[in-house]
Length: 275
Image (cartoon, rainbow, N blue to C red; front, side, top):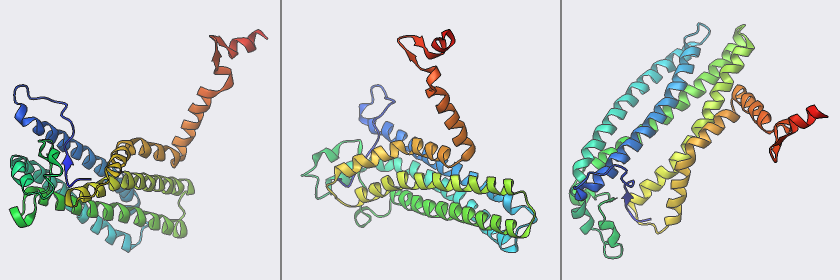
C-alpha cells in the first residue's frame, strides 16, 4: 500500500470542468463518511433507547442512575464530535488544491508517479506544512470512535448488569427480562460485525496514509470486507434475534418445501392431488 487514499470513482461529472474531477470523488467520500456516521449513530440510539427503558424503571440501583448521567454527557460529546468532524472534512476541500505541492515533496514520487493523479490524496507532513484540516479530521474521527465505543459498551454492560439486579430483587416478568437480554446480545453481535468489518479497513486507511507498505492485497481485502459489512450485520441480527430467526426459518422452509418444487413445469402439488 502506498501512503495514499484514492477517492471513489466519480459518479457525477461536472461537464467541461475536467480539472475538477477529483472534487466529485471528494463529494462521494463525504457522502460515504456520512453514511458510516449515521450507521454508528443508529447503533448508539438503539442502545440508548434500550438503556433508557431499563434505567428509568424504579427497580434500578443508584449506580445505574449515576452511569445514566455519564452516558448522557458522553452522548452530547459525541454529537459535538460528529459536527466538528463534518466541519473539518468540508474544510479539507481547500487542501485538495494544494495536493500537487505536497506530492512533489514525497521521496517515493519517482517510484510511484501515479500518485500525481488528481484522485490520489496524500497526507501532508506536519513538519513541512503545519497542522491542516485533514489532520484535525483524522484526530476528530479517532476521538469520535473512542467515545462511540465507550458509549455503546458502557450502555450495553450497564444494561445487562441492571437486568441481573432486576431479576434478583424484583418480581418482573421473565419474558420481559429475556426479551431485553436477547435484544442487547443481538446488538452486541451487530457491533462486533461492524467493529471488525469497518475497523479493519479503518486501520488499513490509517497505515496507508502514514506509512509506505507494499501490500496491495491487504487493501483489496479491506475493500471487500467494508463492502460486505452491511449484509453480515443484517445476517447476525437475524441469527441472534430469536423472533427474526424463527421468521427467517419459516420463510426458508416455505420456499424449499418439497411440495412447492417444480420440475419441467410440473408441480409436486398437482402430482400429489392426482394420486
